[in-house]
Image 1: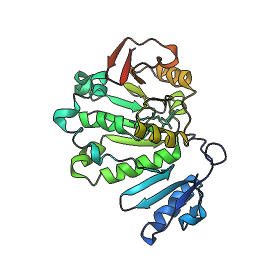
Image 2: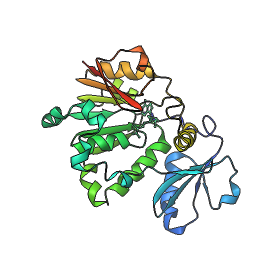
Image 3: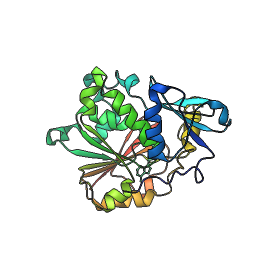
Amino acid sequence: MRSSKISPSEKMADIYILCDNDEYKEKSIGLSDILGIRCVYDNVKTGPESLILHYGSDGLSLTGDGMTLRADFSDMTDRLRPDRVKGEMINKAVGLKYLKDDPLIMDATAGFGEDSILMAAAGFRVVMFERNMIIAMLLKDALIRAKTVEELSDITTRLQLRCGDSIEAMNDKLIQPDVIYLDPMFPQRNKSGLIKKKFQLLQKLENPCDEEEDLFDAACRLNPSKIIVKRPLKGNVLAFRKPGYCIKGSTVRYDCYVL
Ligand SMILES: C[S@@+](CC[C@H](N)C(=O)[O-])C[C@H]1O[C@@H](n2cnc3c(N)ncnc32)[C@H](O)[C@@H]1O
């Protein structure tokens, strides 16, 4: 399966793996091999515009633009509680009544996996696809850490990560999901300062989606019983396709297509 075209020359000015601790040396070198990104041994050699991947006691992080990002589920434990998670809009969009049929959900745009873990916590099996290898490695690290957290370890057994392009996987029929979930990057999805900064950092890795039609058409061809698309509340529908119905929150909307 093809993974993201994230070579430094194409999308990023400069990105490094900072290896400043013997304890994480092996992991850092392993990551360097996977990503084809070089290790540096102190910050001095990196510039102010650089993005830095770093292993520490709290996992793998990405630093740039004065902020540090980490995929992390541990601060979601309250939201993931069994008595709360079924009230999440995303789970209402999937349809809790289908839980009894043990449906398979494909999250075709996994990102940091927050939506996926909400669905898995409700009891759904979720296969996540992430094509940007840096985001995929941050997500993989979050999953490994989550397995060691009591409240999360059972949930992670319902989550599977595949690093690669979901359009290709759908076109090649590598998976036969009952529900397909799409949340492609949308320009300017939130105006709050912190989210905007986080978004800017992510934009250094990934452009807003320009393959909306390919994504939606590939999902339709797999013939799932439902496709769900997350959009900003007032954003356009994906690929000009009108949904059957929408579930609306205060900032986002879930467009549901029942096939
Ligand atoms: C807005 S983020 C998703 C956020 C996610 N729903 C969450 O809860 O964290 C979109 C992600 O989809 C990924 N993506 C976009 N197109 C993809 C594709 N065709 N295959 C796999 N991943 C894709 C991007 O790399 C990006 O990480």
